[in-house]
Image (cartoon, rainbow, N blue to C red; front, top):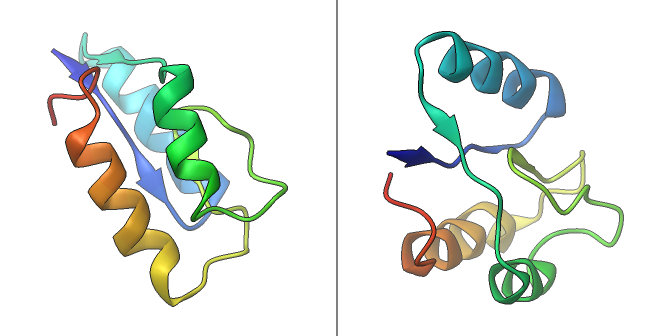
Length: 78
């Protein structure tokens, strides 16, 4: 089952991705459509990858908007 990670700090996302890999869980890549939708909420300098990291630019809607986009993404199951 593909996994998605959403964080406010890159280090936590890397640790979580590493833990997923060790547990045999796939950390999924994001589609171009999902990336474009996330661009509306994430700061301009975010890495555009999974783990999705606000890169220190979180605003009030960054995490909630990003989570809504990711919950609707067909490539994400959890």
